[in-house]
Image (cartoon, rainbow, N blue to C red; front, top):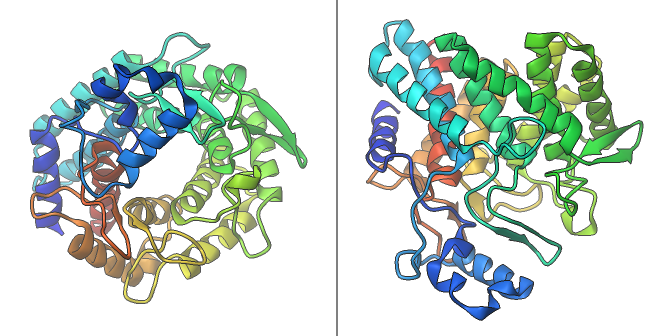
Length: 392
């Protein structure tokens, strides 16, 4: 695993953490020069064409490699994990000094990338995103998902550097969640929206990541409103958990699938609330969710499934989130056999000799394009958790 991770680390550092994304098709300078850029159907077709094609047309169609805030946040948290390894004397992945230099660079970059047009710090993506024909998220529209990963990274940085500027920005993100996100009443609570824009208001993992932000900030400020608000939306999401421990993606008719990594997000978010708030009311939900997650999404040989009822496409997020979820829930050691099988399968089947990880494996022709946020940053953080847990 050491060699695999070092190849990934070297690749990402050589690329300076910039890259392409499955959804960045609208960044094409060619598309932006065409008249149908104003058509929602054309935008959707263009994005999906880039996302689904096993061939990479981005250079030809002038899509630049760029920073992505969520990707930078994932790298940042990963480097923080490596720094803690260095403190233990494990400098295989860098010295304390070198790792801290990367940490400060990435954290300062996140501060520059924040959207300052809302009530608190928040982050979006570096591309316009057309979601089906329902709505368009313009570039840099903040989302609770991207913001959650950025808050994670900045809090991790504060714990290492003790520089108050990182903590202050992270704390302000709670205002974005409480004041700018829409709320939809549901069960005995409510769901946070995916972004301040209307159109994606009932996604369970998005609401739970909003609760995760509030829980983390409560851990620092002890502001009761944050704990209470987080508990309300967690209650609504847990009331929507099926008896077998699963969640559908969202409440719209087009969002009724059940998948691996969003299930992992949900469990991790509820666990974070429990750890930060000291509230164990949802411990049964965590247990049910974990049981469903582990028994459903991983085959005996380590193959990670995407959906609960079918294997393909195998997305790199599916193995990656496993290491994070089990690390965060304190269940890594007891599932080490499974984790080892999944990691070995992933490295053997989804890592390129150059070091980067593939986006998806399909039954037919697979996409082996290098995506910095979706694949490489995600696996960078994921394997850093594996490395940390392996040294306990």
